[in-house]
Length: 141
Image (cartoon, rainbow, N blue to C red; front, side, top):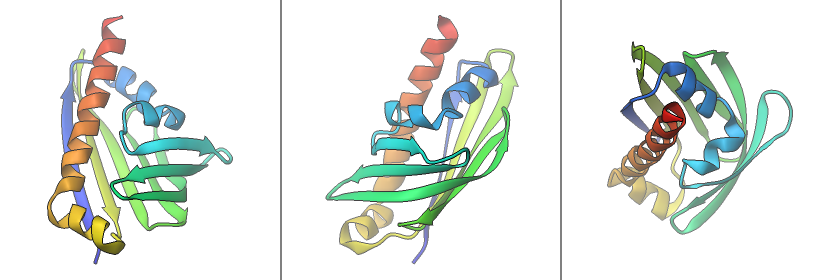
């Protein structure tokens, strides 16, 4: 069974600020609550360590598309099946919209439960809220 989620947040920060923060994947642990570590393995590959309820997951992901200030897409090449894209939309000179889409293959009871109860969407929504705070703080300084 494959699962997916789509979450969006509007940010009081220009697209350039949001892009700058999100495009540095080593900063993801600062706003993605379940991400413990992202280590570059080259220009387009990264080793990830996630801490999910009841489980630790490790995988290698590869960037499949990078369009500055528009989108970042990735998929896993080792470990869990996971793919996603983050898109950036200019709403105005000082506002933007960030949309996160993820497709994944839940394994085990806890992951299936998270997908069925929308816990995964709630977690993604929380993380986008953390990203919003970070981006708005950066834009204000």
